[in-house]
Length: 272
Image: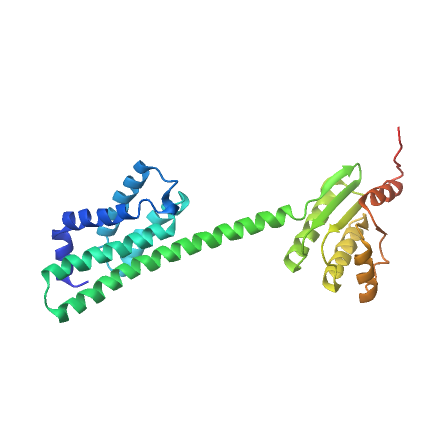
């Protein structure tokens, strides 16, 4: 920024801060801030204002580096992005009004406006960038967690495990299913694995291909694979698509699949 703007901000810091605080208090009761306590709000306001004033004499790049560590902490504590963007917009209004009271030259005021816009917009852009990056990281972590939970391998009897599948199976999830199957077969010393597709809404050529690959991989590590949960509509789709599932047993229900698995392991269910 131009030196005279920097000098003005430093000299009028207390006055500008008081005006800005009034503006911030005006947004205190907006719905997205309801869960934040009065003490926390006041403390964060004070920290936020101090942080912005500290960037006055810094270059745009230095200001970004100065803001990021603080914004990361505020993001983690759950502060909404809209609070900071509205707060910076309020500060811009305060700055321009204060400078307009002092500077009457229209040409110079245009220069002032451009400098203030660049400074404030730079901080807003950095905040948006930091928040977006944080949201993307959280989304990816949640996505990975959901993927891990979406392909569990459950031991039900000695030598018999079940993998219930629910929802759409895409290439990424199919890879995870394969990895979990192979790891689980070795870990649980499985002789038979039942893949339950009761909760899979659509079985098309790609889904069938992934299931066949998984069953072949299980066979290669010394276990048998049974496909269960073949509903009538799924069976009809498989036939219409000409998908060959003849290489491994299929059963209509999990119960029938478990009975078959027990036969393969020389066991049987007995009613007491």
